Image (cartoon, rainbow, N blue to C red):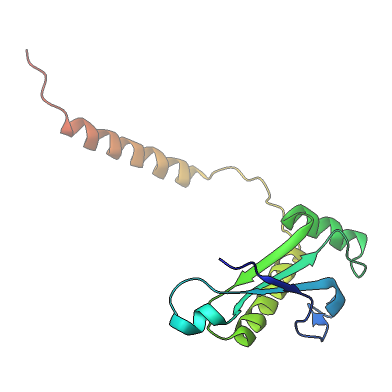
Length: 146
């Protein structure tokens, strides 16, 4: 398999993640290579596979909270690989869209679970289900020989 060509020549526009975060084009590394799988001669000659890399640890636009959150979630770099379409342009758009989705998902505040006790009804239902399962399995056994 041919080595994917490495370039930063992707979409030149910055990537707007949300109102407060826009990633400049210079912080995104785009790589293109041949896509695997069927496609005949087109797949063998076109670099339609897209790899988009965002170096979280080296980014200048992230504040400390964002950097810590992204590093905990993804590690020092976030890598998106797309080779679903035969068109490099469509794969580029899909890679950028997925990067935005993943970053926005990581930025959502996590709701902490409040510990609660099981209700009496849930305890009774659980014990009843256990008794039913036990009797079902007991019915499958051979009868005891006297």
